[in-house]
Image (cartoon, rainbow, N blue to C red; front, side, top):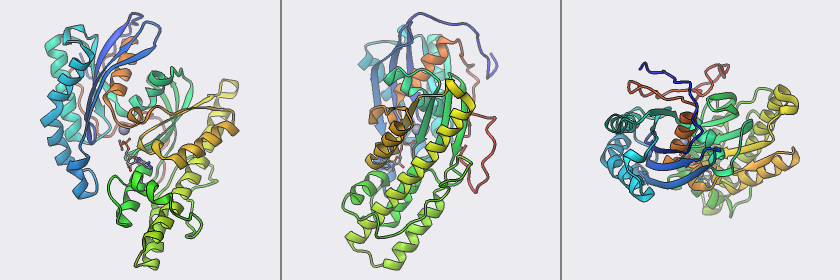
Length: 370
Ligand code: KG4
Ligand code: ZN
């Protein structure tokens, strides 16, 4: 079957799907059940994070990531099947992340998934990692499209309109750093640990957000994109001017950075809401879902909650373990696609760059992460 072959047949019966994720620094596998009415249930969800391997370098090292995935993938898959109490023959399909992400890990996860599909004769599903994040609210909150999603992780910062499985309209994206990346770089610059988000949040709790004025790039702009690089540079300049930094200086800089990011997120999501409402009128989305590690940030979450309330949206924030990278979201995206007959061939190649909405107009910027 060619790489993008689709079998247009629908399944109304229950489906049991194994999902494999190895696109970044988590090796994960899970088994999810989707009933005939489209409700999901997680039977197992096994995640091994590589944080300890990457911590000495202050960021993910692709080669170390790929090797670590290869070493433990088989055991993680075994664990997911055992914990769910199922074997390969019970599965309806096998899903693996095919992109976007780091090539070495993608290849490792894909090869595992394809080998299992080949050995068991089950359908194979090549999953877009961003689609899996975008569909998670269907698994956790039973959300049906259309809805808006804010995806905020170490690698991605996007607002997307989810119109259906396989149908996405990208509204905003970052023209430089992802928000999680900006948290990580700010933490590194201030001498805090990795990953930076939780460290910056902790320090910010003791800080005065008003002591160091920081810019809020893109706020008020008609295009819905994000930009974080200028904010990060401003933190560096303030830090250099105040050096040597006391603990209180670091806390104040963290508080100022977190407040600026929160304002940016609220403004950018608000703009995405306007665009979705203009485009869809009375059929406008009434739900805002959030995914990605940054969703764990309490100031940002509180800001989003206020925004949703003010604009008549309901907010779906999946539990942290399902906001960050995991196998259950891959299995669920696989089940949703399998239900529509959207299976893939065993020749499906890894796609380190794989935008969810290929039609989205390019955002002009230094290092756009589609
Ligand atoms: O979704 P995720 O676990 O992994 C991927 O990037 O795929 O997101 C990790 C990112 C890191 O950049 C981390 O610093 C950030 O999410 N993060 C946070 C918080 N917890 C994790 N950022 C801000 N506040 C947090 N509490
Ligand atoms: Zn992710």
